[in-house]
Image (tube, rainbow, N blue to C red):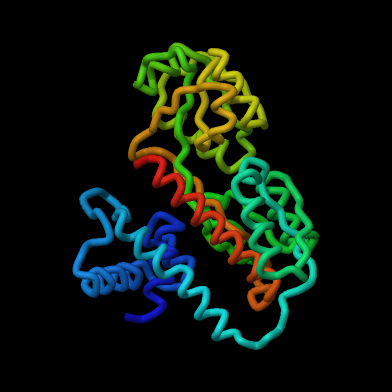
Length: 299
């Protein structure tokens, strides 16, 4: 079994699809599918549920990735074996909604493995952080990748996919999206953002009757408004600690749900930059751990 196959499996789990893993590895989706079938043949067990439109990884897929992850990292360290310390400064931007998710893990990883590497952290919206990477003001950013794929002048590394969902007041009982929009105002997230534009497209396509609209550029403020019974909204799944203070109902949107791709964006000229690569590894490890915890919590 080729080592690249396990890297491809990691890519499928991170991006959520064979197509996403193919973009990450710069191969075709059919090549990803073939590698996964070869791995299944090697194990003698299925790794994916293929009953739906897209293959969904099962628990064995996560178990295999967990088993191989540290071994692959150790092999990479041995292969590098140059003894050169990763050092310098990386200016890293992270959109505000993901800072609690990724920053503790990234900072811990860098301190433990690369103590001579300094992180300078920046926050902002996806559009402004992406522009800052392009302009050379920062070195990398974790942002929402535009639905069209983003600027071809930059390197996009998919890290995680997040399904948008409807959040409704805790006292509401309706499960039908159209019914909730008839009863409550739509509190939309800033339409100039990637997720806000996705939510707006979903509403205009699937909801025929809208009672009224408000618009905010703060997801926590929207969650608080919805918790107070002042409307409904379509957002990324809110942070659990926020929901503890501002309870809301989470309503899945089904197969038509918009899916946001969160990617690390860098300049193509930094493809061989060891410091940027170290931050990419830290981000990948942190988000993989976060996703495993979410899977365990659902089970």
